[in-house]
Image (cartoon, rainbow, N blue to C red; front, side):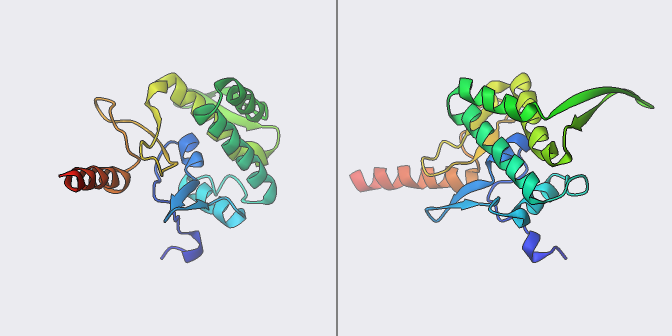
Length: 182
């Protein structure tokens, strides 16, 4: 049975690491929510990505993850130039070491300090998404939603973080507006 204090309360999970870090902030019933208000929430986020065995949910790691979240927010939703500088500042705390494994060439991330690991991995994941398909990094189209997603739909036209939540609300609003006018 899962630890009730470690249950992930977020409405959208399972996105790539960089976007999932942005999604540690969301709106519930009109009120802003934040998973990363303390190390317990950090432990939930680390566990959601299998990072809890590699990194400690402590104050230093939390501070670095919050810095990475702000950097990614600026890069995705703000001014790309300032966002690039902020993301680069996080990336400055780690690097990729090329390795040779039994399976062939590999890569291993290395960090100045292990507490930078989760933040660095999220920033690095954002670079991967940019290289893969930058136009598929999206914010939900619902005006009251702050969530982000990577559009994996075949035709690349996904608009909502969740069709069941935000997409349905938008459809209901349009229907209400049509019936009200009629």
